[in-house]
Structure formats: structure tokens, C-alpha cells
Image 1 (tube, rainbow, N blue to C red):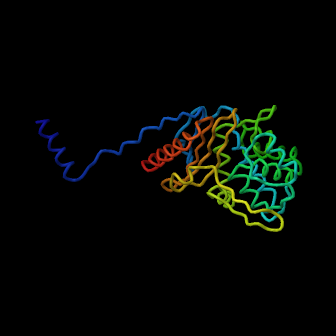
Image 2: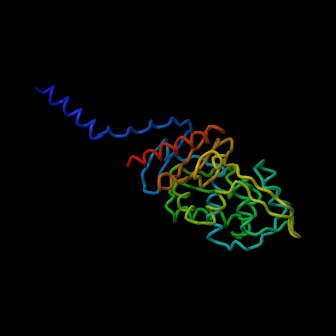
Image 3: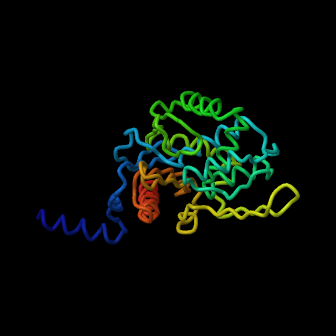
Length: 277
């Protein structure tokens, strides 16, 4: 009798279209030493050594841009000095190809900072808005404390290694990105695949291309920044829209190409989790 009732229930379920709950996707394998993914509703989708203090290479430039946007006007004009050019060349850092005597608006220098990850642009912006690099770094650290980034310490505006040893965590970097992306200017810059400035009387023509390959490999990507040093490894801070929410993720000390493929998987995974909520 029990078997008969059970079979009847199965038939009824099939007739009325009752289905099993959707299965959640498997959590991606992440090879980065540290990682973190969170959405704008506050749901954490992935964490791996996310509170460990480590160097974050050029992700530092996100705070540089954040402070500049708080301090200055996009129409301000900054003259590139020999020191700006020499600083980037001496350290072997990525540059935007700036030359002594060129003059740019702050808006253009933000593109030079964030797309090709120009240490020359970082030096110029920090020097101008400190004023002086020491004062600017102090502003970066004050801002970090004000934003609640308790595990973050800056020693320069570009993320190159220093004896003092700057650091942050995946959690702090994700939080900073969420705040920075509230600025439409910041979002416009970091979501651009390239930015061109035409030749004028005060500077040469430049084309700066974004080092963030995720922009052309996944849908609805908002940026944000790549980074690399020997100490930090390959890093990626990324953001995208998924199922109506903003998803921000961080990969620290990963492989060069793997960071982009892993970011794609993490975005898909977070999107699936949001869709099931």
C-alpha cells in the first residue's frame, strides 16, 4: 500500500511539473596564494588566505587614483619632470612612455596610470598632489585608515618594492575597489580597453592600452587593475555585473595567464550563486 501511494505521488509530481532544486556549481579551483570574491549585497563567494598581509604590486595604484580623485580636478595640468621619467626607468617599472616637459591633464594621467600601469604617471601625480611624494604617501595611508583598511600600508604610489615593505590583503583590496567604483570617472577609466591622446603643443600623441585582458574575455566587466612584481607575483583585481549585483574579486600571487581564466570562473561561479539565492 505504501509503495502504491509513493508511486502515485511520483506520477502526480511529474504531471504538475514539480522539479528538483537547481544544483549549485562546483567551487572553482584557485591557484593564487590569496583570493577573495564578494558581491554588492555583501555575500562572500570565495575566500583563500584573504586576510594575509602581502605585497600587492600595482594594485597600489587604485589608492593613488582614489586619492587623486579626492584631491584634484580632472582639468588640472601637470608637467612631467625628468625625475618622473627617471624614477620609472630606474626601477624597471611599467611606464606610460611620458617624456620630460610634456604636460597633461589629470584626467589623461589617470588613464596613463591605470591602463599601461605607468609608474611615471604615478610619480607625477603623487608629486603634484602631495605636494611631494612623501606627503602623498601619507595621504594614502590616512585614507586607508579612514576607509577601515586596517591591514594595508603604502610606501609609494606605484607598488614597486621598497625596503619598508608595503602590504595589503585581498579583503582590503576588494573593499577599496568597491568604494573606488562608486566614482563614475574611476569606473570609466578602468573599464576602458585603450585611451588615445592626440598630439598637441604640450605633449606627443599617446595610445595607452589596458593590461587587463579580462575586459575582452568576459561580459559586463568593469575593470579593475593588474599588477606584478617578483615579490607579489601576478595580481588581478576585477569587477563585473552578475545577475543584478556587482561582483568584486581579488587574486594575489597567481600565474600570469591563469589569473584571467580563474577570474572568469569565479565570476561565473558568483553569478550562479546569486541566481540561486
